[in-house]
Amino acid sequence: GLWEGVPLATVLRACGMENVRRVNYWGYHNNDPTQVFRSSLSYTEVMEPAVGDPPVFLAYSLNGEPLGLERGGPVRMIVPHAHGFKSVKWLQHVTLTNDYRASDTYASLDDVGNDPSSHLKTYTIVDDPRHTMGARTSAPVSSPRQEKVMAEFEAAAAPDVIPVEHDVVLSGVVMNGRTPVSHVEYWVRSVPAGSGVSVLKDDSPELLRAPWQRCDIQAEPADWSAALPPGTSPQSVFGIDGTGRAQRWPLPYTYVGWEVKISGLTAGDYEIRARSVDVNGFAQPEPRPVQKTGRNSIGCRRVKIV
View 1 (cartoon, rainbow, N blue to C red):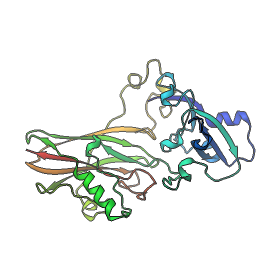
View 2: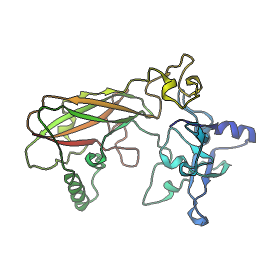
View 3: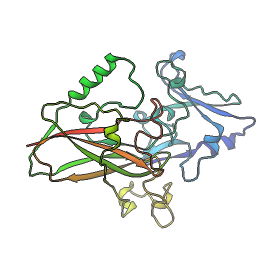
């Protein structure tokens, strides 16, 4: 969607600041003060976005309409470079402090333990969540029971049955994260009939040496005016230049689609995986494979060609 609002930095400058190291904020949750949902940002994140990155802003409109309650209106904090828990809904309070420590609710919960400063990473998702195989990372599994539950979950996804004369269409979306995406690639793996799903960790030697092939990422719209809400000038949108074209594509911190048609598969069972590769050459889940640092799972779709 197309968000509209005012940069938080603009508002804070108008209020006046002194000796600030962190910005704390929270919104309405319920009337229990012990359940306040808080988040925070460093002074630098708010006042000095990286070159080419959209700023943190106070949103009041979505797709040309006032921001409704279901989306966090009338005013919502939007932090484009961060995970959703930073973009607090129903914003009520913004405070400034010289205490550098994060006050985020998610950072303070021992059973969650999210990194309060983790930027969105580049990753891809395979369409149809029934065929997305769990949060597989190179981090060790905590217990044999967890490994068993994950294997059972993955085995429960029945394969799509496709006639041999048809192409297999694999599609999904890729998040253009902190380090921009270079491309998306896929790997077709033949598996013995009736063998079930092979649980491959993201550091599996087989996966690392697999013959990955590139997918086509959706091209930039030829006419931004047709893609935006009526009456919206493309030049008024962050990331689009004076000629009406994207300064870089995909736009930062946005999803873009991809698709590939796979032909020539003979009768049998297959697993088709897809992953993103960023401009530094890191393939998903790198460069941050540790849990709680961003999405790490490599999506997989199972098909049976008959």
